[in-house]
Amino acid sequence: MGPAGTRSPASPSWPLNDAFELRDSLLESYAAPSRSYHDTRHLSEVLARLDELAAHDTVLDRLPVELAAWFHDAIYDGRQGAEERSATWAQSSLDGLVAPNVVAEVLRLVRLTETHRPDDGDTNGCALSDADLAILAATAMSRTIARVNIVGRPFSQVTLRSGSATRLAAPPLHSPVVAA
Image 1: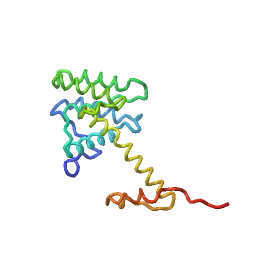
Image 2: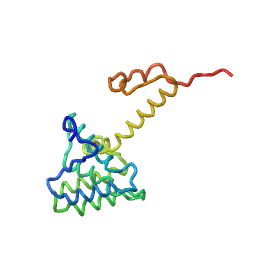
Image 3: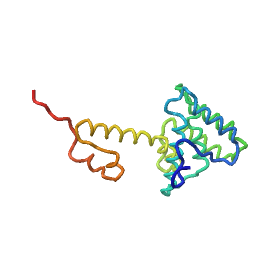
Image 4: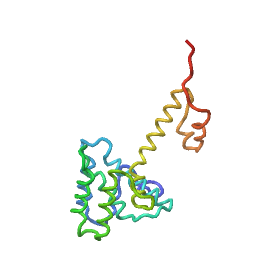
């Protein structure tokens, strides 16, 4: 765990008190050399985002959501149906290990990560989808910062961290016009 009870990217926390062979098999899958983005770091980041959501009073069923996070990219080979194959792995691994309703929710959530389109009232689905897609927001912010720097308006991480993101909004960004 990192500061304030959050997980560090290097050590994803296993939500079960046992089944460590399953955990190790999943970690081995995420650590495969063929993985570029959907790797152990991604898993850790998804779990950390779930911790953040829970810390901000998001109501969710922690066990099935965390298990779904562990399984959502367990099989990631670039072929269609990876989520379904991950769900199949989850079912064969979790049957008899956790309650049937937990297994059913894990399978539903893993399958949901194919589209990331939960219903508005689906707090578990929304939490997992938000956690899984959080990197896209970070990537968009990185591109915005790069764009600001390219057009000659320096923008530092210190400015972002201090909450002074108003520099992004005023005045509109555009490239300088050079007369020919």
